[in-house]
Length: 409
Image 1 (tube, rainbow, N blue to C red):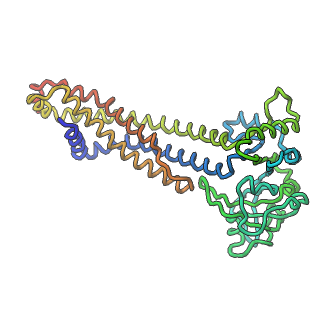
Image 2 (image 1 turned 90 degrees about the vertical axis):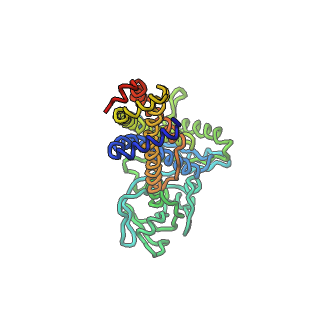
Image 3 (image 1 turned 90 degrees about the horizontal axis):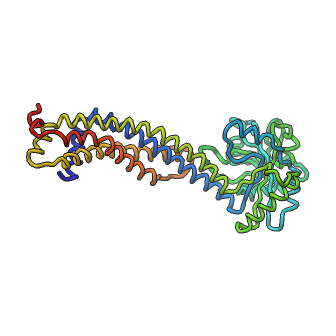
């Protein structure tokens, strides 16, 4: 029998036993859907995360107290014991920077912000920063101006707000020159940042920036006062050497002994991206593992439906053998039917998984992707399940005695 005929028979069997086939294929569809859906979302997140970091430039790195990702309370306790990076240390690093390096510093807290008789719906990021923060973090000003070195030096009560804050508090009113209050401290708005949009479902324009010296003056008694430092190297080629120089300078400033590890973290685009991808990779593996259980159950369902099919078509098998069909012909026919059933469920799972994964990615503001590697693996897995769980029913069909099969009612 031709392969096309076997596929046609498999599809005819699905149509003839709609409910039974639907329940069997549903488990395959769910398993493949979980694999494709989760990997689509993960790939979208990885792409979006890389795009966000690349906007900072390949020659920018960060220094902070904590690593980019921490797993479990044990790591949290370990890094909490580190001394804070102080603003004075950030200033000393800036003074030791070589020509072409741009050193910025910042510190954040979440506070409720009010202005123009309105208030933000919840606490938002209020960040203390210096004048270099804008360049190092790829912020541009849509209206007004950014901070100057004098604003930072003299601890001026000034603020630059994100576009979402401007809309929420001031609506159509020009916010420049107006006041906003964060935790009862009032600041005069001197600028509005250009809109960045959302990432991972969160707005990137819902923030308030104030001079870092003003932040430390008003909020230094908050839970943590560790400062983050960003350094833009003179060039991408010189970044590694200049990062080593900065690390050496900061170790000397913080009096870290030569035999001791750094008591701070150096984060580059590559290191942060790698850490994020490792985390999402574990999520993918977990989803694939759970999906594997569903696919095993689906394989058992395929075996069951094929055994029922063999029993229902016993007389047909006897006729085919009587007119010359070999055991290999019968075996091949039923294996093709088993694989076809699996591929039908797998195809539905792939389509639904991509649609659901990219639908969620679009909602969260990440990019559209198709996980081609996992699509091909899913096709291979469905083929393996079809052969692995279909071989026993196919072998039973091939071993039927033609005389007994012809007499079967």
